[in-house]
Image 1 (tube, helix red, strand yellow):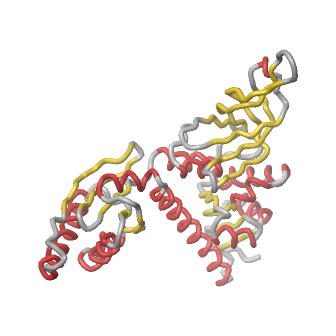
Image 2 (cartoon, rainbow, N blue to C red; image 1 turned 45 degrees about the horizontal axis):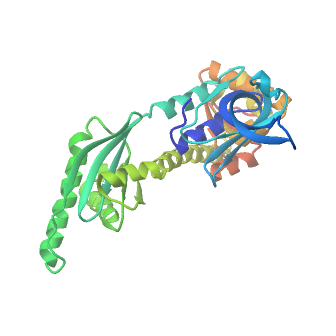
Image 3 (cartoon, rainbow, N blue to C red; image 1 turned 90 degrees about the vertical axis):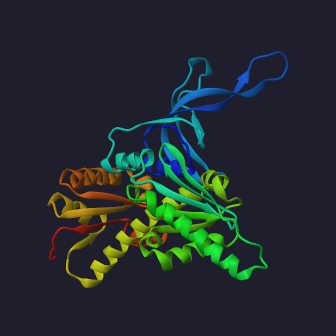
Length: 343
């Protein structure tokens, strides 16, 4: 796998587990034979680790994979020793598992091919760029100049500004027939907020697809590319995923409150319901997946296999937001059931 964005690192963090084998290019400090006192230096080397722990370091945007070296060049004599792989953007890694779960492959599928493109509107009071972000890259659809009158011509300026916003809105609607993706509006200043308000008044359908209005230093085509480089778009995708996870968790709590018996929690109870074919969707906190004991891990894997085998869905919930915190308070595992069960 080639890591291309910060979001890719987050996907890897949720995929790599204890006892996986991870292969990557890294550096290793080795002792050098020479005259005088012993010396050492860091040399590039390709290693395979059996994973013990994984950390996502948000401060430096790195994934740290700790484990025991299982494969390395023989002349380094480091097999069996501990090592930490530091994985960042533009790094390549290979991951081997005893078994890939459907939810893990689905996550990889979403990372490689987005389910739908994102429309990026990058604008200020002078220019606007309308582009489409696909997995293959950014495609610029159009560039528009506002040509606003001077600030002293207040009425003419407001009228021209309305036409400018309307032109941008028209561009979005003109090519979005086949592109019903989410819309992100970026740029410096307040033009982006005014455009979002204009869209809400003139085209509620378009406004409903605006999922983020974010600040970047530039407008136009440069601003669209800046939004990619600085992580604005990847964070938006992550936020959308978080909304889905929180929504699923709220449905769990709603069903618990209604006491209809169509929800269950705790690994043991969910596992039992899964074996009976009652589980429609299972929610598992990512922290549980990473920190479970061997015995608990086996039960989790067996439960996931059972749910997937009976046509159920698996949703891994991040512990980074409130949905994950609420799920942790229920033991880290919950399930939405196909029918009510009276216990």
